[in-house]
Length: 100
Image (cartoon, rainbow, N blue to C red; front, top):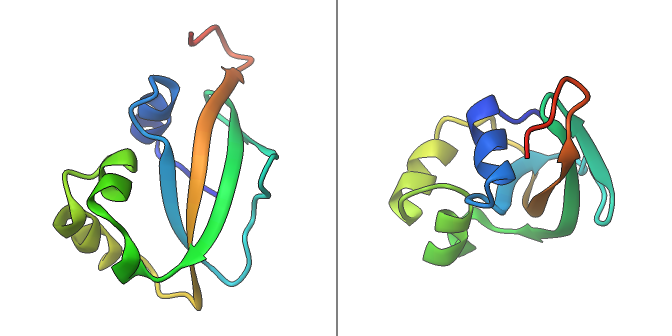
């Protein structure tokens, strides 16, 4: 799961707590971690869902202004058979320095 640095920073600050992905199968597991350039992310709940079921609250938790902004982003993403909502949180700073 690749995440842009600006998004990682927002996750670290607690401003983003969700990510959305289209996968054939998830590349992370609930309760697991993901190593990133900024440190470890904790992976929370992962739900398979339909993109049209994303709520305004979900969109904002993922860093979008609203559902329309989310839908615009979604239109730029590759197509995939399954759509997932992933809870994320910063777990610890990266080895290249303290980011807390």
